[in-house]
Length: 253
Image (cartoon, rainbow, N blue to C red; front, side, top):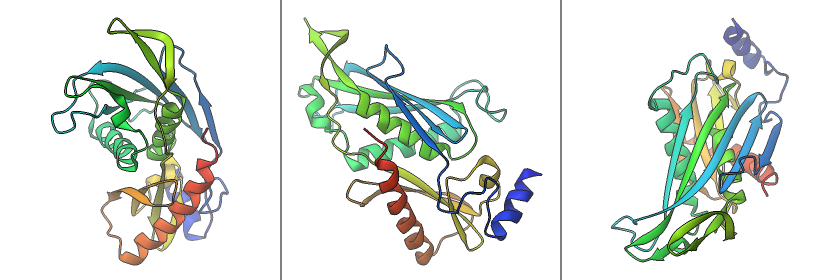
């Protein structure tokens, strides 16, 4: 079994693809790949591949934020991406991934939502981020979060003429002012690894996804797995995430 082999290698301070424990696989980012979307991006993290699209519509603001735009993140796990995925409504994993991506964007305040207000309490721009898993070979959270922010950085706001959206005729860029980067750190015994492959994810004791802002501040955390972390674990994982997020952020434009 590949999982047993991956665990055996990790215990020997090695990885199945010969990377160091703190090395990501090759990252490729392509923006503007969906012409009919307001913004889009494809991110390849090794063999893991995700496409994110941004669509803007006009809607009514939430009652508690009458002068702010709305952010909604949705994720689709298609059977083509993995034999473990089934068609139908979003499952628990898809919902959790959407929440993690949403939280990193929202808590970092990377979108100036107040600038998306058209008429307070009546009309605001709604930003929809649709995430599509194309190929699942591990570390979906980091890949999806990176695709989402890359798509937001590519997004433009369409013009409004006679209270109607004119698709394809853009007025300005979406007000994105920060680049939060999510880094997931897994733990196996006393080892910490980043960007786990599918085989490595199967043997992790637990993992912690950390969303890091431009100033190295942490704006969101998500733990997965049954094993607990102590304070020393979290501090070590945070240090790794901060370092790796700075390297990844340089790839975003």
